[in-house]
Amino acid sequence: MDIITDPHALQTRAFEWRCAGMKTALVPTMGYFHEGHLALMDHGRTNSDKLMVSLFVNPTQFGPSEDLDSYPRDAERDAQLARDAGVDALFMPAPESMFATDHGTWVEVPGLAAGLCGATRPTHFRGVATVVAKLLVLAMPTMAIFGEKDFQQLSVIRRMVRDLMLPTTVVGRPIVREPDGLAKSSRNAYLTSGERRQAPALFKGLVLAHNMVMGGEQDVDVLKKYVISYYTENLPDGELDYLEFVDPESLALLTRVNAPCRVAVAMRLGKARLIDNLCIDPSDRLVSEK
Ligand code: AMP
Figure 1 (cartoon, helix red, strand yellow):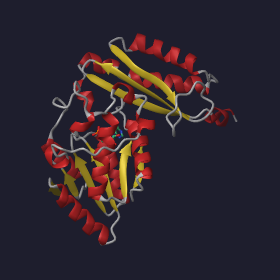
Figure 2 (tube, helix red, strand yellow):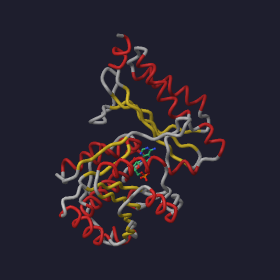
Figure 3 (cartoon, protein in one colour):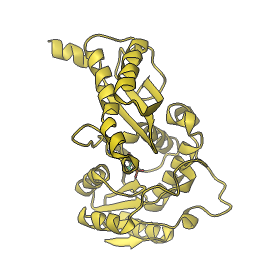
């Protein structure tokens, strides 16, 4: 595995691969790898000739009071995991090589970035879209692979790639969970043992909403009321940021669940801010009734 720190060295290597007719994949990450990251790498390895992974804790997607400095990092362990996962090139740039001090060009997708996480993290998706645009220009991958864990991020990136006509196919992959349902996340490392015991209730609340829709409930106010009272009881140390039912394409807020939707949640729990989401398709109910 090559470890590349110079952005232009990545560009040269990726260009050679593309010119040789190879199918290439890129998995952008902020590191501190877990099985969620490894599942994306696995998909890339089995569906391409060359697999690139970027490991970059992107300062521009953190707000001023967020966890940029304390974000968990372990570059040596990550490099070994990437090697074991069959990665061909691990790109680990220094922040100053990705963002010059007078960097002034931003990619914004305001329609999709305004709500949900964007409401409390107003510059987050601008930072994400800009760094992913740079990574796609450098790596020129046939496919770029992202997790549905960050559902809003995936929507923003799909729209950016479409709007800018970038020659990459965006692939979304399912959320990898702990056995108790908690979505794997580098930020789970922030949880104390007491918080970790409460954390699986975040996903269980989404499953409760899913089951209520399967039982015939469509009114979002009713669904929210039940899930929020479930959280109050089972996640007493959590502080709800949002719980929303959204259109899976436009991310518009829904008042009734009468078509496929995503229920998305963000919760502060101690030092962590946890997010999760689940697809709910009310037509599954009709299938199971047949
Ligand atoms: P991060 O390092 O947290 O920025 O995540 C890098 C990529 O891994 C993003 O596309 C995430 O959506 C994805 N990812 C993170 N956690 C999971 C998970 N539990 N399951 C699937 N993908 C994930």
